[in-house]
Image 1 (tube, rainbow, N blue to C red):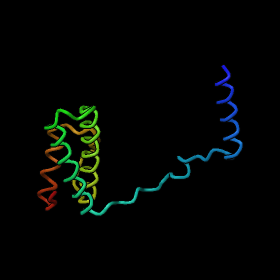
Image 2 (image 1 turned 90 degrees about the horizontal axis):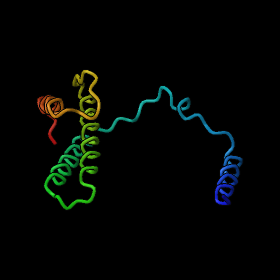
Image 3 (image 1 turned 30 degrees about the vertical axis):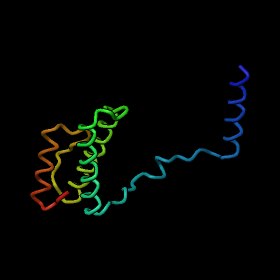
Image 4 (image 1 turned 120 degrees about the vertical axis):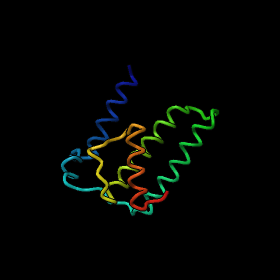
Length: 116
């Protein structure tokens, strides 16, 4: 019980010291994230692809399914960024990508000269 009061007090003290809470959604509305150079995206795809292969091969990795899932999500997001950078039509694709859709996008990026 006393712990709850301490946390309430601490929360109030922090809020008083911080002033009004900023509205981050309003502050960042309309802003676009900085685009990474295509060379950086290709290097990221290479690194993430290698990590996915390593995770598939190494059954000793702790929380392997989780690590594989988040690495595949990162790969898919990076793949979509590369598509946007090279103006490849994604038809509104979002992570996680199906295996077939991922391969279609990889093939189109390779057709456009991207190597990773």
